[in-house]
Length: 304
Image (cartoon, rainbow, N blue to C red; front, side):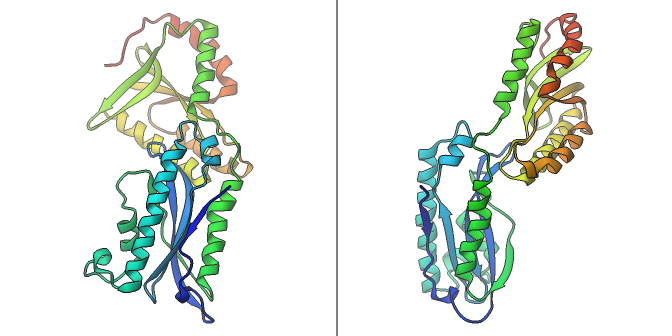
């Protein structure tokens, strides 16, 4: 069952006239390197009265099923800390609307508040962009926003995610079937200035050949596009100082409403620098039939 943690008792959030509000979605970032996140809360700010309220959940069942290495106990501890911290700052705002410990000498502003509560420092929580609206009862709107961005998004998620490890298992199984596992080096590192990346496997054929599993079975549709764009940038960076060709083996999203996002991302990968081919798991057997003579004809050489 979900435990909902909220401060929803602000009188100023109720009334009979339309009130402007701003809000941001709190995200749990499971893997920052590939942009995986899940919405876990909403923070609302009333710019006219300098008041905040929020809803946040410590629900872990879906996250634990979707992320294979998810630590539920640690997550609940972090959520408890955030809840207590938000609650404390809410009280401080009630005592002093300008809250110098939060805003210093600046005009109270949601962006300052968000960075104070959860700084953008690369940890496992982050904020979405700030959005806004008007409503007679912002508190009721807070609950509807929570239902829209957190509850409904969670209910649309598949029970289990098809992740990179599962894609790699399929790749490796095909390698074993062809007797290629001893001719392919796993964990091939490429480096450029101030950046490096460890590819899943590779072999030599005049230049470094690589193969990499990529899953687009993500929680949010925008993550699919972001992941493809990150790969485009990663390959562009590595291509500056390395000669290589990478084959991307991709898994599609399970969600029906993600098909267009997947199609766009597939094309983005195909156009990325140093990409040899982008294929699906279904094409692996045929692809390895073509690759077997190439891999067997070249000795195993590690990338420098």
